[in-house]
Length: 204
Image (cartoon, rainbow, N blue to C red; front, side, top):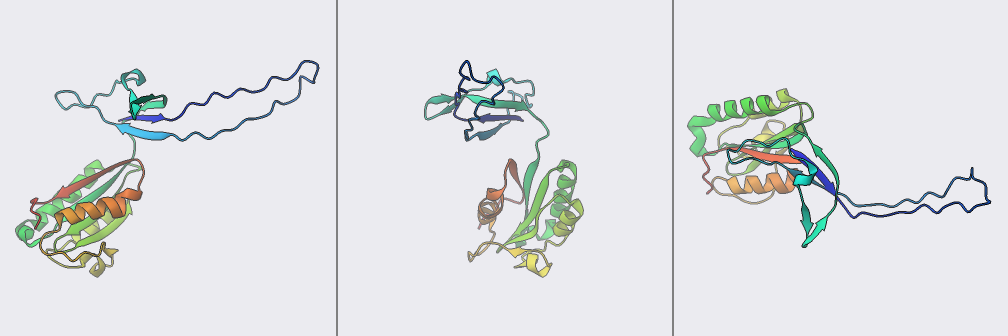
């Protein structure tokens, strides 16, 4: 993961102290604010392996055709990530719920590191938030275990945050779950973000 920041460069000059005046006088301080934009980039080679030895000179940033100056650059493979785990609990997954729960739990246990957070949502005829963002793997596992097939408002039944969004949905709300996860939850999070979906990919 390469982290870059760029912004408008300002050249500030500190006025010289006139000769004959006390050389011990503290020159005035000039302060200015510069808005920096953080960009995160993952680069892979033709074999899909992550390239880890890139330098600042390997990157160029353009905005509206104008090249921006890269103010800071770091090559970091340990930046925290915020994950949204979406579990399909529609009727079509009735025979697969245990497998879905097992896959979701194993994924989070393997992937989450110190500083990472995840939430758990289920979707069928509605979209339920089973666990809000947390770094506690036990809370996340309990939320996964409470997922039920076709159970409207399963989150609130399980004393969890419950349904999010207000749309009336018929069938499997796959696209609604993705939209709500992005707009209602991940949109307010900073840094690296990802959604992982365990589903048969059938939106109705």
